Image 1 (cartoon, rainbow, N blue to C red):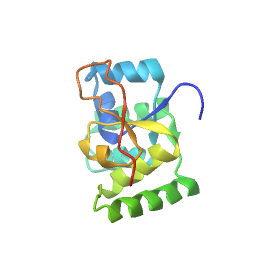
Image 2: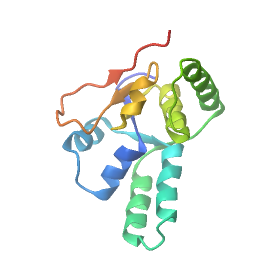
Image 3: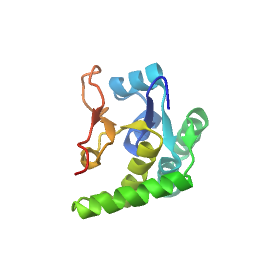
Image 4: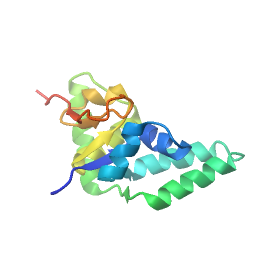
Length: 148
């Protein structure tokens, strides 16, 4: 990829945007640089509304959000990156939840910084993470240490 860095929103970041005004740093990042989500995050959002069929306002907000944001598809290259990442992390005794591992692999494959307040992502080798929950809007994304 070239040009402006791309940002992939984790489900917790997407949820904050869907629910309305929240983190100013997150809103600024999306407005200033644009963002996208993984199809895995789309699945998590859709699961959340499927569990709450009476939450019609939330369902509408999720649908509006999904219409407005690019959703990156899962590809064979992403599947390979996932397999390699999971194997490397298991060798080191590290793990993430299944969905988080899929999202991390997707961010790495697409060369995106991952926007998340989930501290577990800091253990993913080579993943650039932007923690939107920090109050300083000037904080730069950080990269996890390289695998040894």
